[in-house]
Amino acid sequence: MALTPRLELRQGQSLVMTPQLQQAIKLLQLSSLDLSAYVEKELERNPLLERDDSEPGDRDQERSQTSQPEAAVSESSKDEGLSDGDMAPIDSFTDLNTASEKTEPSQLDTGLENVYADEAQADKDARTMAAGEPDSGWAVLKSGADSGRDLSGGVQPNFDATLTREETLSEHLSEQLVLSISDPAQRMIGRHLIDMVDEAGYITGDITQIAERLGTSQEQVLETLKVVQGFEPSGVFARNLAECLAIQLKEKNRLDPAIQALLDHIELLAKHDFKGLLAACEVSQEDLSDMIAEIRELNPKPGLIFGSIVVQPVIPDVFVKEHTDGTWLVELNTATLPRVLVNQQYYATVSSNAVREEDKVYLSDCFANASWLVKSLDQRAKTILKVAREIVRQQDMFLAFGIEHLRPLNLKIVADAISMHESTVSRVTANKYIATSRGVFEMKYFFTSAIASSHGGDTHSAEAVRHRIKSLIDDETPEAVLSDDKIVEILKSTGVDIARRTVAKYREALRIPSSVQRRRQKRAATLSP
Image 1 (cartoon, rainbow, N blue to C red):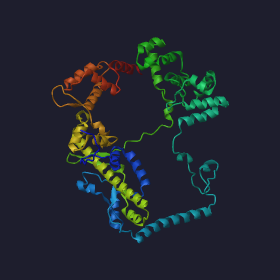
Image 2: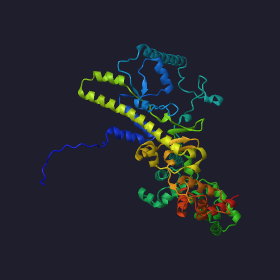
Image 3: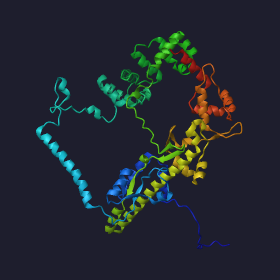
Image 4: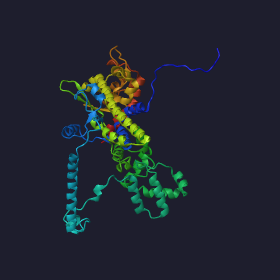
């Protein structure tokens, strides 16, 4: 058969990843914060998109009182037929009215007149006050009790209260460096040491490398280090934990040879090896107990008290509440949903006046992208709600009775139940949180592997088994510390078929030490005063 070029016509179906489809997939896996940032960029880039900051109730009242084009829910939301009790309002809106509808000028002028009238009155009052008191903008300090008031009798503003952040550790150390060291060479070394201090207050570099980098001797670096180790907070510029504790004890005049020997063998203290500590320190058991109690009062990370970052609470994407009839009500958190509008009236006005072809193409692309963004946000919200409902339906026993009743669940079970692909469910559950009566959980928390039952019954959730292991260890006594083999026997007697290596893996994941370490810790607790 000869190989010759020829033309053939074939018909087939294929899925093409268009830019719009890629955008919808990207929006689906974004967290609420990332979604807000993405929408902000689109608002800056697309002139046809507008932010809707009004509340749903205020928006409905405004529609009934004015003749402005109303923002209606996109048609895809209406087709679902969801009631208000089933689903929280999805605040992705688009203008569905014709471009011929216009705002009445009288209403617009009235609103502007009120704003400008208030501003004019405020300006008039300010000018009147300035005319009576020409120096009222500056506070004049007085002696005695009136030092905090200006000429008009008002209290001076507290400028310290207007600080936007706390003082950092580096800034605090730099202020002390200027006051403590006057030699330029030592001050430069001290500045470099400050730059090498981590958040906990420890030096992260080697003294030899620091000396080579600065072109000086190790003795001069150590001399400067000795000076800066006296800075506040006590314990900063330490090279290890033992040195950090020694600096604090030296400041309290409690660094005697016995406690120095304890610091030299601090690894034995971490292992709760008290026999080794008694031999190393050559003290009695009572003195060792006192020294351990004194060390526990010290701060092992002194730098963390400066400029610590405030942990922001997690904002849930879905709320789950118990209904009066015992069922679970699943609602979207509307505070995390961006509210945007497509201004069709503005699009019709601008496009009708466009003359150049490239302008018309640009406006058409902006309108298509804006409309697709609104639909994507709408679809994203409904998909999250659909997945959350199925998770609640599968894990209703957990919501009612606690973590011990958490069922084994995977993506395929949820995907088959709601007729979606597993990858879609995986994207929905990524970086999404659900608030329940038992706390706020990431959606992926409810997907756990299954552990077989030793009695042939239902399988057990791995998370529930981990919780059971933690409960058994928390309830143990110093005289009866449970080994991994003993935990396996207890779990098998309750119907959980689990291996010893699995128990050890779960225990390590929970950061629970071995039975030997726990026995030493419990004995150490009895020695503490």
